[in-house]
Amino acid sequence: MQLPPENLDGYTFLLLGAKCQIRLVDGRNITFDEGAGIIGLPRKNARDRLVKWLKENAKRIFTIVTERKAAEMQTSFHSVTITSAKSKWGSCSYDNKLRYTFRLLYAPKEIIEYVVVHELAHTKHKNHSPRFWAEVAKYVPDWKTKRQWLKTNGILMEIF
Ligand SMILES: [Zn+2]
Image 1 (cartoon, rainbow, N blue to C red):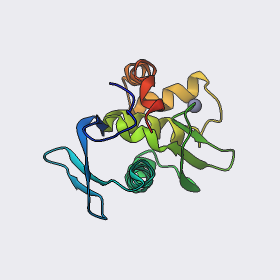
Image 2 (image 1 turned 90 degrees about the vertical axis):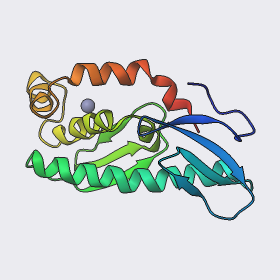
Image 3 (image 1 turned 45 degrees about the vertical axis):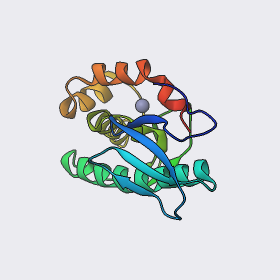
């Protein structure tokens, strides 16, 4: 995995853990061929357009996953907000407002689910006590492997 070059044409990165290549196009709209793993990105303001698109998709997907996991864990949350944070994947405020960085969208779905379960577990335990980790383990038994994956793939934090 490499950081994006100035000219994004041909740059390949991961979306939900699957390879995705950028092709700069002359059109006005972003197109995404999921099967082929190709994003058609308008040349004009390409980088800004892409980040906006990633944030919109992050909001949609992370909200769905959070709602599903909250039901499974029998808990509730106040809201889901997408950030551009480079230092943390997610957070949960004292009043259960959840935040995720859009860069989490590069990770495979099971890693996203771990982060969501982690933040939702904070709606019950506002710390990283053994009881907190026991709650996480109920829904993600191999949470240690997932957490390690995020540490190993820290470069994902630097993309866009
Ligand atoms: Zn935490």
